[in-house]
Image (cartoon, rainbow, N blue to C red; front, side, top):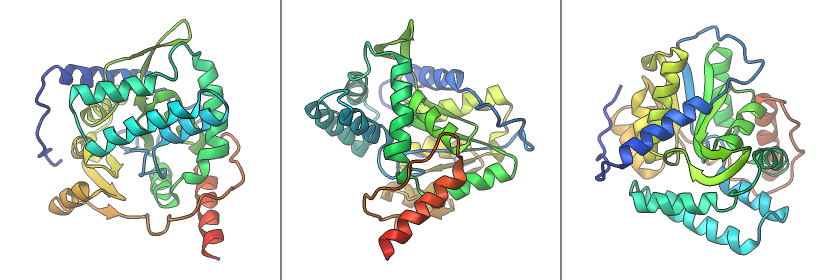
Length: 296
């Protein structure tokens, strides 16, 4: 494993929040029914979602879908998108920046029922997000499944949405940001911090302890330098569609680099909605079909 070379957060209170977020994500992560006992029980693969397995920010696509269904107004989504883009592009681990991003993300679910958001999430993913999947990355995930390994999504996206994506693709499960729930209703508070940066590494460490994984035998995939802590935790890190900082770090540490963006620069066009539980194969087929239509 490669030691993470970046600076640790300056403010010590953030570390317990990261740890709590990671532990909460692992505790909330259920193995999808039907996955079964893996043939290779001590090895797994961990995939970031945004710009790794899906083009763009999954939470933003979800928010757009909610807005189209009159869940909230367009002014709210513009403000939400502005804050999220600022947070993600800054790569900041500052508590104030994280608090701002968290507040904007939670503002649209406070006092809403979990089952309502899950139902909407399933429909929005099927109708408006499945065409944004990246076939090249899905093929890598399928390779791990074919080898009898577990495959987990690890993302700052709310765990409910991350689980919907994992279930639809036939993956083992998902580690995502955990929001506090009381009596089936969101309180507007998080458990710990968003699952971002160091929190992702804590989540992977926690799920590895729970599932008996050997991290030296595990793989991880991401596009962002923010995920260097997670990538450095495993024996086989991969940079997927990497940002400039991650590309430089991957080259310096001889990490494999895969860039699917040239193949995936496609226009927003309609594709048939994926039915629930169709798995990763149809996701790959749909992505390639979109690419062929555009190239004609």
